[in-house]
Image 1 (cartoon, one colour):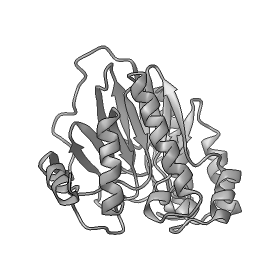
Image 2: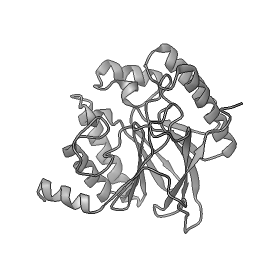
Image 3: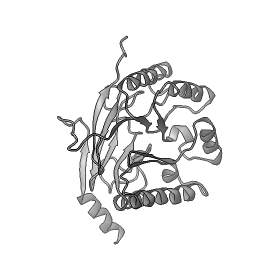
Image 4: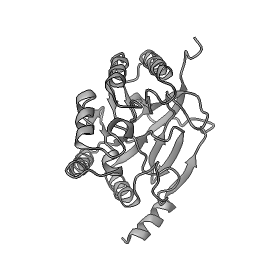
Length: 276
């Protein structure tokens, strides 16, 4: 299909961005399999360093009490990647009593990643892309910087891995949840490239891969505001942060309930303890 036709078709199947919480959070029609938390942009230093250290710690305590199966953090773990910020991030993250899966953000591996910045991230945090299977679902934690600003030798390996893990999940009839930092798009699939999205040609390639291989949700951060989109049944959600929100929404995170066959519903949970 010609590129323009593909873009127009994608536009036809997209839902306009929702910048406010739906009046009634969606509910599952089937039995609950598990729940998890989506955090975005802990980004120590974005809202004031001590503020962000405090809010991240409060979130860890609150999430532990809520007892989800695990938590994902959609990138920008720190504001400035240095020894202090990584030490503080890892210290607070270690407080989770559940698994915590992190995606790399532009502040973590630089806007234009280098071999050195990736090496540093892998030493301080761990793998910058990997997959996790949980109760019949496959969670794919990808590095959007390698799509946003390709790095020779690294982006090719990342692309090959991404395709392979999606195809493998499809063969097992495993619904896929992609966890990243940059959203594919913010308002419409055919929007021009900007600071907040993935380049158009790459975006359409990725949307096609997701559509063909059972992706049911694409969870991202980076925007520092709530963005909810739907692309051919794929939920694309950028949630609230614990550092600083640009849309005046309160600090907090997204709680996801998951049923069989890709059915997922989410709601906002405000951060507690800020006035204590």
